Image (cartoon, rainbow, N blue to C red; front, side):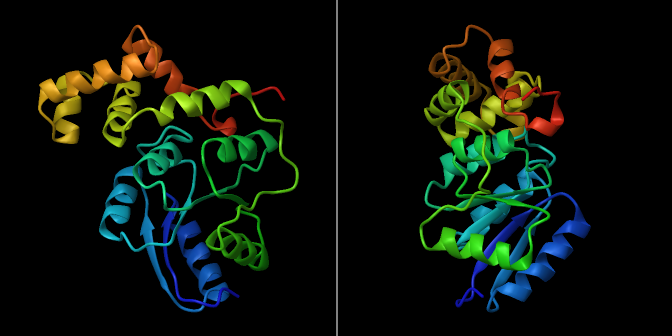
Length: 218
């Protein structure tokens, strides 16, 4: 059992799973506070409202997120905050991609309470925790992670809006920015990602899609 009380953010869009995970966490943690988020926007709000959170448990599939995009955003905005991906998709390639995009651990949703406790304890001690079987690292994912790491959090938000097909005026409204500011961000995003068009940038975001959202040959 983890010996100290913690503040943990649980991000998953399924209420029943959040309830089950809360129950499991209460069984392995010595008290603490559990904050829930059901979408990317509520996750952003939760992390901003709780800067003392020690760890985030992140599901890959939430409204507003494109596969690993929520993980990429968190790593850019809060590099000191450990993010643990917790998913029903424990395909070796998915586990490896989570690691390459900056996760501190990967916990299958089928994990037992002792495994959950071991993973959280390891991460809080500064380590990492991943299932033993992982696919080989991908040069394409390494390059994608490096390219995305050049973007600021604001630019990542704009990139996600581009991927959703939003126009600059729509992005400005959604992110509460001036349209000229959005134009500057779009230009910077395309330049940093070596993209010649918004469509090309959107294709890069689609590469963040988790394996169970698209057909994939191993």
